Length: 290
Ligand SMILES: [Zn+2]
Image 1 (cartoon, rainbow, N blue to C red):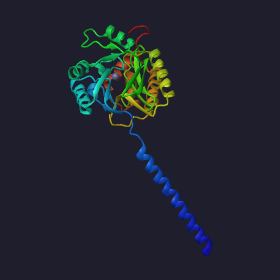
Image 2 (cartoon, rainbow, N blue to C red; image 1 turned 180 degrees about the vertical axis):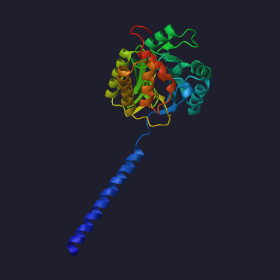
Image 3 (cartoon, rainbow, N blue to C red; image 1 turned 90 degrees about the vertical axis):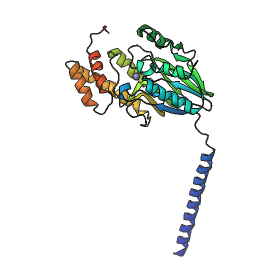
Image 4 (cartoon, rainbow, N blue to C red; image 1 turned 120 degrees about the horizontal axis):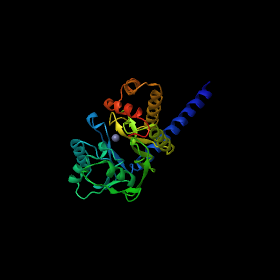
């Protein structure tokens, strides 16, 4: 049946042509796609600095630093990374007043004299109340609306996370659907629960629910076991699961050491196991005590 085979091959040729033009169109549109408006450079730390993360938000000519690391050597790596961009460091924003995220600030201030260091009002109040001899004094963040080379960033303040009061903030870049979650999200690192109670853990879960509703495409956690691991939004669900598991294990554990063992068994691969004991102790503290 030569006729039908001819038709068949003609159809095939048409299909091939369609496929080729589709591929060509894709190729052409690819070449006209603009590069991402901002680049995110993460600098991690090992378990001696709790696997904390700092993130450079890099635009065409400006850089904003989100968290500052803890140990001098790690802060120096952050400073080197900023210098390597060849761009201007606009400001350092500290997500929440926990020392593993701000103790590197003096190193960065020495390297970038005059750079402003910001916390939200609530975070700064907490910092002032709890840090006896502060090595630096942050300014109050003047606005939650920030920009890097014209790209809008939105700081969401006063969220509950790993501090017992709602003083955590996150940075949300709506145009890119990127969320810098800081210590609302932990990626395969045990959550810091030494400054928590049942209420603050419930509020933390509410923060996670709120952030998930934003529909982020990328979520950079405040602690990462592996700094190069993908920044999947799944980390929000994983952090929520950890909190749920913690509270259900708390409900059946007889005491803090039992809870500690149960958590370690539940999350065997997570980093910074040495902090789990403090979280278990906090969970057995009488209500109202600190
Ligand atoms: Zn932290």
